[in-house]
Image 1 (cartoon, rainbow, N blue to C red):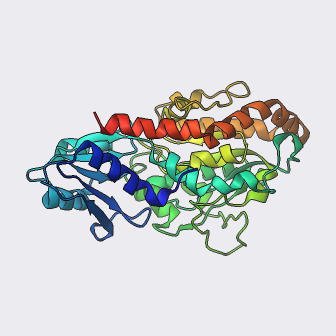
Image 2 (cartoon, rainbow, N blue to C red; image 1 turned 90 degrees about the vertical axis):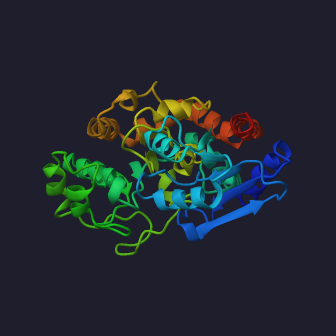
Image 3 (cartoon, rainbow, N blue to C red; image 1 turned 90 degrees about the horizontal axis):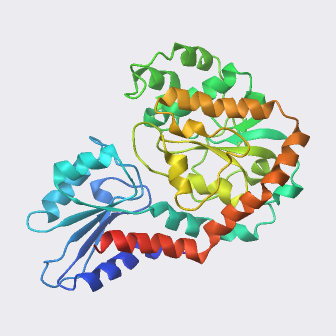
Length: 363
């Protein structure tokens, strides 16, 4: 298992061996920070002729929003030195924006493999995670939606469509009327850049009278940030399907976070609400998905609303099945579910992720 707290130290020592003439590593601290004031760095000294490794790999790259941070790094280090951008976005239009604007070099790797290995390592011993063949289904699905504004307003569209289909009582769902970071969700749908020019009046109509939805935090309590833990484990164990609502959804990029590993650790089947092609991206790391049981062509749908509706159609189809039929399906899936968990927990998987980082950095 991995210790994420020594992650940048590990990269720094790797780089020092490659560039003994001097290397600097710059990274945000604590996790999830993105301001200039959050930056930490390690400097090996020497002749200052080696590269600067700028690690913006915890959060998505957002043109405009991240520009002040990139301006600072460029002004601080970039006059006479190479700057390598370590990032966790593959085939990313936003990343291309930053690489072109600042003339940084690209180093992709999957940061959240390392973070998730650290955060979720203890759950292999948790008695609350029940083997799929022993589960009793009480809810058809579970869906976590804490942040629902700005680029994550797609979650409001998904919840509105579930309400339109009459499926809210079929699953465990967390959802706030007002996003804790961005405010009223109806206003977000109307004014967010990604949804501004879409015909989403039907979403507004569904959200107008929607009450707070909670899974395990009480009727009126704020939904806490559960990035580093498996939230509502007991409710997950009585739910058939885990609906992954990823950080990124719009546009073109391969970008997944620790969220995608939560159902894998929990040995739950899942659907993925993320950017187009991200289910295939996950499979490229060796994981198995569920096209034997339902249509996963949603992953190829470029239109974002069609992608949401296609995922919700899978949920609707599963909701037509009895709990007993879903329990039988879990037995059929048990080998796949166990395979995915064992792959994630394996030393080989972690070693391969580290080798990918080395190969991309030390070219």
